[in-house]
Amino acid sequence: MNLHGVWAIYTFEMARTWRTLLQSVLAPVVSTSLYFVVFGAAIGSRITEVDGVSYGAFIVPGLIMLSLLMQSVMNASFGIYFPRFIGTIYEILSAPVSYLEIVLGYVGAAATKSAILGLIILATASLIVPIEIAHPIWMMSFLVLTAVTFSLLGFILGIWADSFERLQIVPMLIITPLTFLGGSFYSIDMLPPVWQTVTLFNPIVYLVSGFRWSFYENADVGVGISLMMTVAFLVLCLLVIRWIFRTGYRLRT
Amino acid sequence: MDPTDIVSIENVSKTYATGFEALRNVNLRIRRGEILSLLGPNGAGKTTLINIVCGLVNATKGSVTVDGHDIVRDYRAARALIGLVPQELTTDSFESVLGTVKFSRGLFGKSANPAHLERVLRDVWLWDRKDHEIRTLSGGMKRRLLIAKALSHEPQILFLDEPTAGVDVELRKDMWETVRALRDSGVTIILTTHYIEEAEQMADRIGVINHGELILVEETTRLMRMLGKKQLTLELHDPLSELPDRLAGFSLELANGGSELVFTYDTQAERTGITALLDELMEANIGFKDLHTTQSSLEEIFVDLVKRPT
Ligand SMILES: Nc1ncnc2c1ncn2[C@@H]1O[C@H](COP(=O)(O)OP(=O)(O)OP(=O)(O)O)[C@@H](O)[C@H]1O
Ligand SMILES: [Mg+2]
Image (tube, rainbow over all chains, first blue to last red; front, side):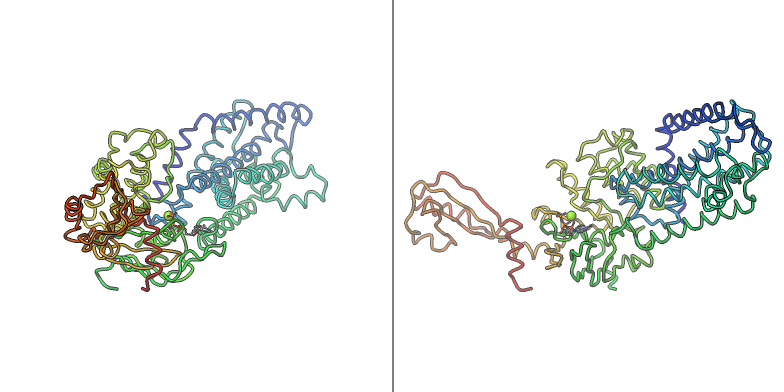
């Protein structure tokens, strides 16, 4: 195992984060606060409680998930796309590092960054609404697992993309709608039965549900199933990445 | 494999996804500790060959071993021995000079060694810039930084894909010195260039690639003997209608309606005959107003080589 190599990539990526600290923290915090104003205050004045939790508090886990997913995908995809774009990827490809080590470095850094961001948003939210966390360890586990899984997805995206447009279109066209439809802002039982079934095909439902359970102990699907689905998705992403490096897809000509 | 060989390239072919065949059945043994120069016109396949050995391009056919390690099956061991300076100037922007060299060393699995990195940066005259951001460097400095990155992990084999492109004449000479010093320390060096003089001055052996084929690999001294013809052109004051008899001993030709005298000589020979010729011209009272020398260009040499049966 080339640990020096993993560490080199990881610290390089983290250094990039520190350089752009303000924009990488400020933007999500501002947009989350906006969501609170719009959803929490405006809608919350009409829907007072969901499953026994005040609406403002109810949407907190979903909002954190929304940022976590977006940031993970965007950080990780940019992290690997940029060296491909400017050509510095040559060094990574010519180095004695395995694909797992490369993934560990890039995805580890992206996941670290988005997990920290998730916690910052949680702290911001706790200033606005009272929040209880019933199962802090589960909460952290879901946070980290989600950050890792979606950073893996972002990594795949960053290898697949051949333009900045494509790099941006996936988070906007896929992740955002799936999160909005994934029960971030409502409980699934509020939907008509047909839509409840359809919703179960949305992987993000499981994340949001499991994450919310760790806060308020109420969930749309069982927490075990949530965990299983998340891990399954993680494994799927890893398999795709292994295939990418085996075949050299978009990396080696 | 012969223990004196460090890289062995066998029957390597490369067809790109476009269907273009960039390399055709290349066989090459690189000797431990030598400087090998790959010469060839644009698009010949030099970079493709280097990139295959370094793991950036997958060969379509054939195999490569580096110090006995297959570059696909045993890529870790093979790549750890190699440093690569790519042809394109690809660097980060906001990293510091020292930071990026540290990164390279770590990436190749080596533990930190500040003394070595200082030596490497001094060798490429970048130590005084170690804290500067890369984007503030000039093109030539960036090229030298790429060399420092490649040397950061103490490779045994160094690939330099056009190392002197964009480097000024003064520094180019210094760089040759650095490369020679590296060779003396035991590093095997493979470099590509378009300049035959550069290959001549630097390399122990020269390989010529054209249209994806390795036409020949030859000791530099032998190759230069084969190719080292030069021409001296004298512009005469008064045109000659024919060559005077006393000049019959020289390989001379009249050109440009007799107003130019062209002398072909061998740069590798003990005596070029230039002094003798000038003496004879003086004696014969043949005056000239200007003179210049030309060497067959690389392209001409390639044409020559391709026509020549190998
Ligand atoms: N990714 C690619 N896809 C298709 N064709 C390619 C690719 N890379 C290189 N080629 C083609 O392969 C041939 C060899 O290219 P290569 O870069 O190896 O040449 P070179 O000898 O290094 O040339 P130069 O002296 O200009 O650097 C060229 O005709 C080039 O157009
Ligand atoms: Mg080239």
